[in-house]
Length: 164
Image (cartoon, rainbow, N blue to C red; front, side, top):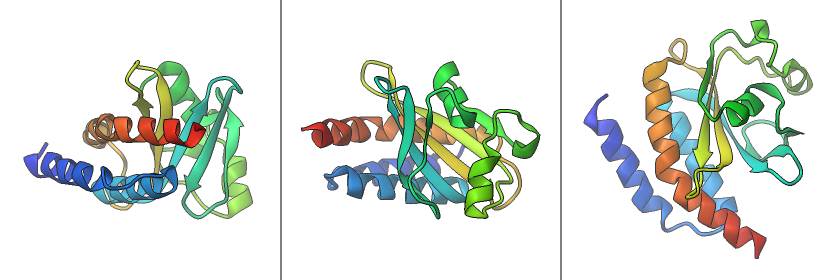
C-alpha cells in the first residue's frame, strides 16, 4: 500500500475532529470512504445490540435502512466480526436484493468493514457499493479496515453524545 493513502487518512482524521454531531460526522466519513476506494455509494450502519437491529442514519441514494442484526452482508460482517467482499452479490444468499428492488439501484459489488469501539465491540459497519474500476479486493479491504479503525473513536464519541 502506498504511504499516500495513510497520509490522506491521517489528514482526514484531523478534519474529522472539528466535526461534532453525528449528522456532520457520518457524511464526512462516507464521502471520504467512497473517495479512497473509488466507490459509487457508501452506507454506514449503526449496530443496536439491545434491539438486535442494524440501521443507517446515512445511506447514499435511499432513505433509512433498518434490518435485523443477522441480515444481509452487513449482518454477516457483524456476526463474524470480519470484513466481507462480495463481488457477485446476486449470487450470494445473504444479499438483500429487495433493497435494490425498492430503490431501483443495481449493486455490482460490496465491501463491508466492521467498526469497533474502544472495547472491541462492533458499533457500526461501513458498506461500500460498486467500485468504479473493477471488483473490490484485499487491498481495498486493508485500506478500509485501517480507515474504520481510524474513524472509530470519532464515531464512538458521536454516538455517545447523541444518547445524551
